[in-house]
Each structure stands twice: as structure tokens, then as C-alpha cells.
Image 1 (cartoon, rainbow, N blue to C red):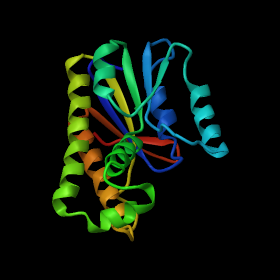
Image 2 (cartoon, rainbow, N blue to C red; image 1 turned 90 degrees about the horizontal axis):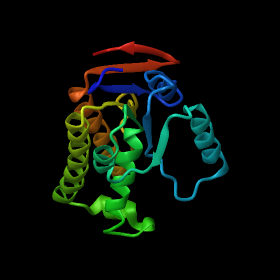
Image 3 (tube, rainbow, N blue to C red; image 1 turned 180 degrees about the horizontal axis):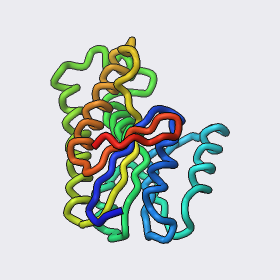
Length: 196
């Protein structure tokens, strides 16, 4: 992986995108694996998924389980590279953190159904600003980075306003990362196709 390279790896659920992303770094490189799927109350199935991901990682890699302050983590830890898995979970966690400052978990749907376009735009901008900071930190620190994300544009239009807002945010973040990336891969059934 070249210095300063930004690589974006997209795919569907269980497409093999994480394994492919991990293969882009050698097991000897000092890599920080940023796991954004921070689960506050993991169930047995989720714990098994997390364990499988952890077991695949090189002993030379460090893991940070976080979805906040990613730009600061990159600035404070000059390593060979970073692997962020995944963009969708980061967006989801930031989205719910913000929404839960305005309402309770039981009232999220009702809050979003009544939310004005100005309120939705504020959430959108907060998330896009966070991503702009992450991408700028990667560029300024001259380190390679691989970002993994789910492709969300191949399904049906979601039924609820909440899921439509999230789907649109996911798509917009994916477009932002793809535009800035040096390389973009789309993974289907374990096969990676370079599209940029």
C-alpha cells in the first residue's frame, strides 16, 4: 500500500469486503484497525462476529474500537496505515448519538417524522463535517488508509422516514469517500473489482 493512498472498499453484507480490505496491508505493517461497530449491548451473535474479525487481524496491528474523534486518532498515532471498518456504522452511531440528544429511544420514529428539513440538514452537515475532518487528517498525515463500507444503493426505497434519511446519508458519505479515494473496489461474493 502506497503512502498517502486512500482506498475505498464497498460491498454488500457478507460480500468479503472486510477480508479484502485487510489483505491490502501486509501482516508486517503497523496498522491501526478502527472498528466503528461499537456495540453497547452486544448479543451472542454480534460477539461472535466481533471475535472472528479480531482473530483475522495481524498481531502487529492495533485495534481502536471507536466511532468518535477518528481524525484526532489519526493525527495522534502516526503508523504505516489505518483500516476503518466500517463507514456505515460510523454514520449510524453518530446519527443516533445526535438524535438521542433530542428525544428518547422509544420516540425516535416520532421525532424524525416531525423533524423539519432544517433539523435533518443539521444532522446531515454534522456527519459530513466529521467525514471531512477524517479525510483531511489522513491526507495531512501522509498515511495510507483503507475505508470499508456497505453499498446501499441497490435495494428498494425504505418504508420509513428514519430509514430513508439514513439510506440517503449512507449514500452521500459513500460518494464523498469515493470522490476523494485514489482507489475504489467493489466486492461481490469475495471477488474484488477495481472501479477507480
